[in-house]
Image 1 (tube, rainbow, N blue to C red):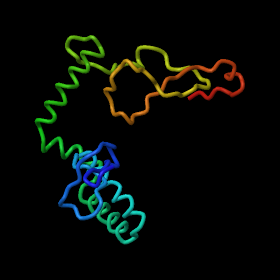
Image 2 (tube, rainbow, N blue to C red):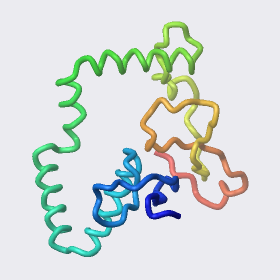
Image 3 (cartoon, one colour):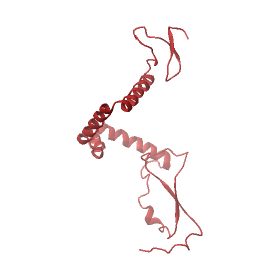
Image 4 (spheres, one colour):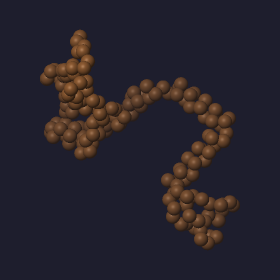
Length: 162
């Protein structure tokens, strides 16, 4: 490696050094690499400086007291009506794709419980629902489960009826 070039610690590509920098150069000027540099500095600063960490926590608490998380989305939607229109249109398109319904309405079946009998008393295995083909249309952190009856265990526990 020559004195005029360096290898970026994030993207691992070679670049010509910036002559205006006095010390060593470890990151290139790309937005992603600069963000990686800032994140590294932040992590190190939080580990090394207790006062800085305390100030950051206090500032975060102050911000959350002014902008409560449970109100943020409703306030944002009120202030940005164009967001609502765009979001509804995108939802309609996703609905058409998922349901095959031309109108794109009723993605979720509201009368699902009324259409069949409820689950029988017994033990069930709860496991995450996995469908690689379908695009997610709900919050990605929502927990969707698949219920399957486990045969053989029903006789071990008494049935609790309401």
